[in-house]
Length: 263
Length: 249
Image (cartoon, rainbow over all chains, first blue to last red; front, side, top):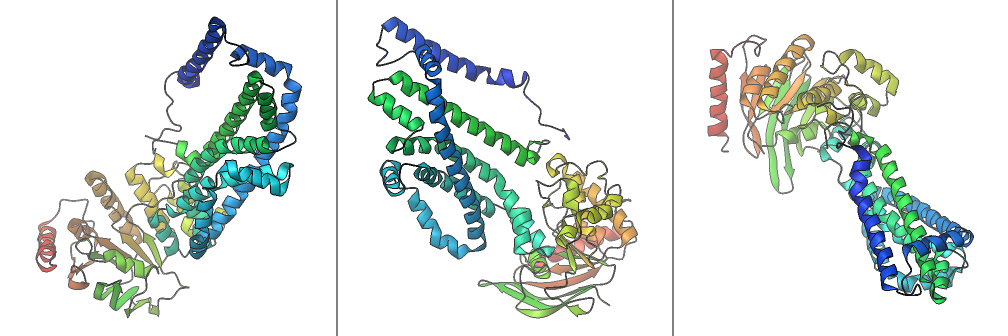
């Protein structure tokens, strides 16, 4: 007992991530080999090396189009994060509001993105706005549900204790319910963040002036699967980066979970 | 004057009469236990005292004054330690004081000199999960005591511990209690614990609970540091007999 930190498995980070690295590299090697051995046309299936090559050659265009996608993703995500937080607190203090509003939130999650995205573009135009809204629409529900469930999962004994100390509902929320919800919130955040970039791309795909969604659309229309895949690589990297940021944030906020043997 | 006086208190929750007619008191500096079968409503009494519930009938006074929302007379220690896992031990210990509106620094200054006596020296910057069960329980007790309320309410404070740790904690607690004489109301279903720690014991019936016996414990203290005397054994047997045969449980 009383370890200062979690014991790490032997070999550290590199040894642990080695299997994953090997399998990913292996998949690309097989892909590359298949393309060269089968002589398949680059118009059907480009080799990974060709995709990388195209990325380097078109880096200016790709970069210019990555910026708007990142903007839409971050703005949409910030919006949904704020709305989810504020709404979750409102719902926690007003149970009646929860009964009134929750069905609407659930229904909002049943709207097919394919159908709703063109409408949002129609209503809000080709600029940043519709993308931000779509990203927010797609990402906000998992975070809201996680927060609301997290508040509800507060240990009733801890709440009882705080009330016995004379705490107000607000103090109980701040000292017990909010921290209790944090593990849940990060679970929701992790789901949301993976949706965020995809939603931004899709919104662009439906109608935009620039962005990775537009790159994909144009590349597809001009039979350039190598450029489509180049955009895909960037999108994946973006999503992974956001994922890593949330993981880092989680370690900071939930640092009490990474201490000692109380897992 | 009685530190706590409960007169003819009854409560019905939903369609269940939980407390029928409870009358008991705790004198200044006295250690009183409520002993009863599980599910009798022992904890319900505490929930009324801490303000989570309100009795249907009967009166409760604390130091002669009726209970109301503003005066907090009790420091409550729940069954499990209820330490906040995301707060370091020090911040858990000052919780009650902070809720009362005391500045954090001032609260820490109050807690700091007590750490050693509660065996928590050097652990104030740990998280609860890093502590053993006994230490967590001592921390929960210190969090209760440091609030300096007139009456301490302990709800089966050692119930969640293993047998060995429980005995150690009870011995340790008796030692502390002898020097400080905190006015204490303990809820337990452990006959030995009640006999070892109390000045007086109330025995509750099964639901709807009423007081079916009041027993004074005359043995000299400290009781836990020496072998259990015959008197204590007789008393334990007597209480067990009441619990088994008269509570209908």
